[in-house]
Image 1 (cartoon, helix red, strand yellow):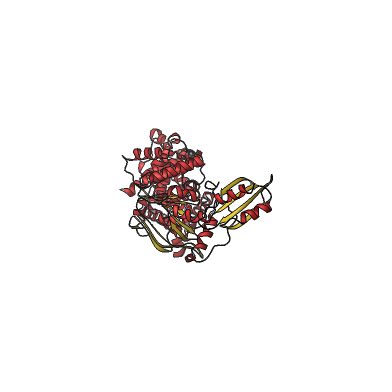
Image 2: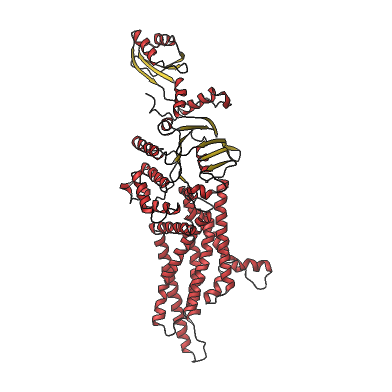
Length: 333
Length: 262
């Protein structure tokens, strides 16, 4: 359905997208994962014919985005990161306008608009001005606009950004239900999001594809070497010696935030080993109270570090990770 | 067929915006108020002058025409008012889409740049035409009460002239609106451009060289003169249509090129 070959976009000297290739099958949901500024939005903008590529080709449903933009645009529903909406229009009027420019025939328009409003649960704000809606509702209006003409391909740039947890869950459910019928590309910088919704993930960093796999494989690969956090009541010294002696522990770092007689450590385990059982037995067996044991949530920076250092084929390693800025903790503890 | 539908969708959206905000009402008020006021002034002056002439020996004085004394100054005054009003009609057309990011919505839907540009141009020109139409109410008493009511043809020519002249300014204003994401900047630049076009007409001097005459020819206001008098000249119509087409072409090129520079 979507074929991207060696796509490159340069802005002057800066290369935003650097030789990206991937393809998406019909009905598949592809997650596009990467930190801010990795080139996700630029790639999506090229696919939606908003920007021309510097090099490479992209085809949607067999049509080239450069040579036949109208054919491509007819088959795509797209929401940019901040949904482009007219604040002084009512929701229903806005969708009516979108239906018209998407070429939905006049007699189908009311039905399509009703369907889109129902799917995105916008019924109670139908006649409100968009400018007065909350961020969550606006995001949904954007989504309603994208699915309005029932396009073959949906391109969603961070569809859950700025939503509250309940809305995030609802939106993910909606996206999942749209898969199969539609081919979807979804960008995000949140790892659990792709685990929940996507069949396949492309990880992009600094304009390059650094990994491509199913979310299950990817997370398994990452989790195997993921860190653990151990908290126990007792002095740091003896606990440190105790934990270091556990087979499979690669690195052990005491953490300052003990307080109340509690010592905390971060443990890096050997790849593929789950040490939680061993660690808990050791601590309790030595007479200490185990008060906390959890997996550390991995920030994307750490994931990139993992991927770029373990896959030697991918050349240059990124700089040292910044202190986990975008950790999503839904997965951790 | 589809292109017509797309253009009309844009027109409808722009009208929704014009009438969903105070802008259309304010401009309608200003325009019709000034139209009425200039009409009144010209008409009173006409009454005064014809009364004075009536005191002179009969038969000697040429018959004073309403067209010459009322319509022509009125349409010329309104042409100057349009220099102020039209930037307010056109400044937001593209600048606001760019600032709001909604240009991305238009650009990623199956619309061509021409459809977007034409839709916006027709929306603004339609509102301008509506403003002229509303202000024509002023003429009704002339037909009802005047002993020699004006002929309708010069009035129609004047209206057509104002509309063509307005359309050419709107095309330029639309183009200027594509250049910035700030409406105010677009408005001020358009106003400056219109003033520059006005002053070009002042270079008109039969004794001047060909370069100066060409420059004078480009003045949008100069072409109003004959038409406001009621003289319909194909040359002037072609001038305005060409000017409008050129402005729209620039707008379309600008919209397209911004995608490459983005």
